Length: 115
Ligand SMILES: [Zn+2]
Ligand SMILES: [Zn+2]
Image 1 (tube, rainbow, N blue to C red):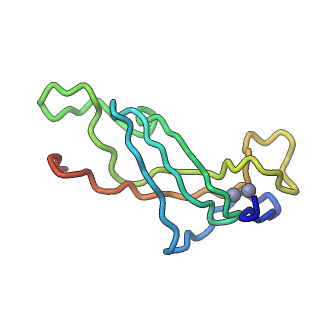
Image 2 (cartoon, helix red, strand yellow):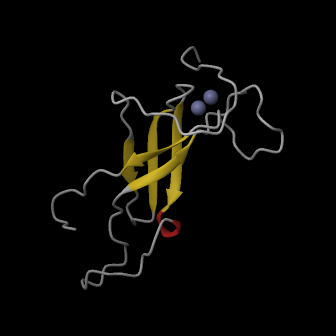
């Protein structure tokens, strides 16, 4: 994996280069978001899956009887889970990456929905 940069482990929020793009994919039932993109620090491709239910209130419905929650807006907090070894990572750390965390903006919902 030549693209990986073996930085020392450090928990911090690096600036995300504007050239980096992230895929944000909503699951069919609307309960999962999968974020895929490069770690700003170690450059590994990170696949990060989050349950929508834990991100915020889901009870507000639009009155259409839909079961899926409303599309998420705002941003998804992501942290590096590259799985590569990083020096200085505490053995008790639950992280499996370089310690970087950042926020990925959720793209606007497609046509047919309004906010
Ligand atoms: Zn890494
Ligand atoms: Zn990383």
